[in-house]
Length: 232
Image 1: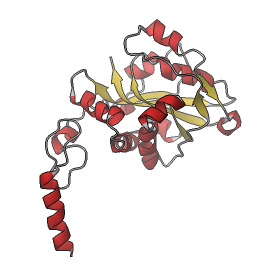
Image 2 (image 1 turned 90 degrees about the vertical axis):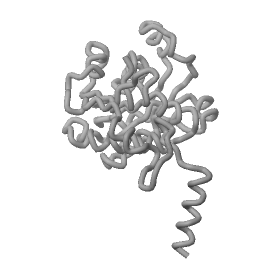
Image 3 (image 1 turned 180 degrees about the horizontal axis):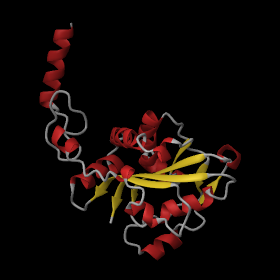
């Protein structure tokens, strides 16, 4: 039966091949989501080894952050853009878990991130989450959780109002667009905790700053940040 099952799997793969989510070539046996070449050539930042990295610098003088990190560089037209498109708009949630696992392995090497108590994904507004079917930041957070062995808490920080896309906005307009968007529901749960705030892509950091501003109102809370990618 196992032999027949193997032949059936090979036949189905021949008719409906699994494709690399970054470059769209056929995956071979043992590959999942990414081909070996794309996985090996992910544009990793290694920011977990650089405390004063460019993501951390974005928050200097804005909010008090223990550590900040992005797993990869986001380059327009690059493979990371294709990968994120499949993840955010084509429903391939497993991409978030995979990238979260890679990030979690890196963050576990840094004592600052290793001291995290709780992981909180940047929330989507309920209308956006209903439309998409999932929160991409939560998928990434779950992947990190697998490696850091820290819980993901989704309903403590909520997005009170929907906002327009940030893509074409200047840094100042992005900041204004995010004012009074987020609210903490259960502050007691986060009191004296080290929170890892997780998002998908960081550009100006306005969304993360807005979330962090609310979280840092909680007594004794320490804040760190992790994202999938950094886009200049």
